[in-house]
Each structure stands twice: as structure tokens, then as C-alpha cells.
Image (cartoon, rainbow, N blue to C red; front, side):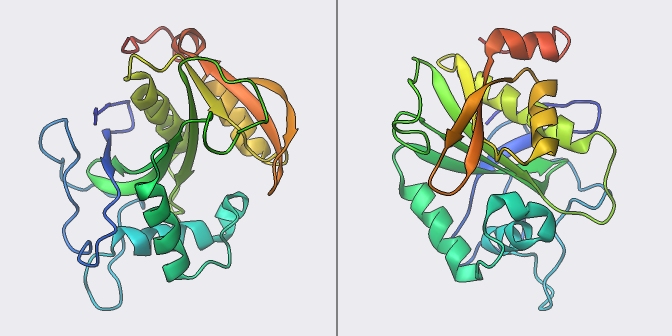
Length: 222
């Protein structure tokens, strides 16, 4: 998938590797040339107690069970629960998950889904070109100012790299004020509150044009 290089470094994406042997070296991104060498900043993978680099499932388990990821609603998940959930997504025709890399190292998760079939079925009237999105930034003890905004910008740019994408749809928890602010910063406009089975959510949309305006007129692929 495409690689973007905002001021805070290079961001790229690759499919999750949920195979039993996914620990070890980080696979390269699916496009964008060579994987840059890792840089400090607290977002790279931490070796496990056995000394090997953690698998994608191990990384995701750490991320989704961290207290800062409470809105992900997997606080009590076991490793096998996380593996099962992301294997389910990998097998789903209308839902995908990707490992986000920052300077070649795993740093965030991106999910992309078709809202006609996943998450929002019966809760709004989808339009042609609608794409649903979730993202989660890895917890770190050394946060980088502006990093999360750079991540959501890279995520949006990746989604709009597909010319078929006309509008991105999100449904964050109504109480997740931090994500509401991030969404607004990249062009999302709240539509209304909706009741999902697991939460009260703020249905919001961002068109390609709104994203372009929010990121200062930087070129967005069409």
C-alpha cells in the first residue's frame, strides 16, 4: 500500500500477519520501496521476554488491552481472543485490518470496512464510495507531539488513495472527545448520534474535498 511522509516521518501500511511464525523481523510495507531503519520515539516493538520481536497478534494484544485503549472495548481480551478477532476480520469479505508502520516499525492499527455490510447496517443510508474506518495508535511512554494527528492524516490519505473512495465514515463513542477533536482536524463533520449494540456513537463523515481543505490543500490521490 502507499507510503506517505509527513513531517514526523514515513508512514506505510501492510496486511496483518497472524501466522504462528509472524514474530521476528518486521515484514516490509507492501509498497514504497525499502523499509527505513527504525528510529527512536517509543513506537517500535518491544522484544518479548524470550528475546524475539513480538508477533502482530502479540502487539495488538498489548495495544488493545492498554488502559488508554478503553474505547476499543477489548480491555479483558486474552491473546487468543485477539488472534480470533483479527483472523475473523482477515477472512471477512467486507472488512480489512492493516499494520501501520512509522519509519518501518509497527506503530498503529488501521481497519477499513464497507458500511453497507459491517458496523453500520441499518443505522444510516450509505452512499456510493462510502468507506468505514477505525484506527488505534500504539501506547507509548514517550509520546511525540502531533503523532496521533499525523497517523490519522496518513490513514485518511491511504483510504483516499483508492479513487473509488468518496467519503470516509466513522462512528466513535460519544464520550471519546479526544478522537472527536482529531476527526474534526482532518475534516470530519458530525452527522448525529446513533445507538449501536455496543455503544452510543457519533456518526461522522469526511469527504475527499473536506480532507483536502483540512490538510491545507495538500494533494490527495484521485
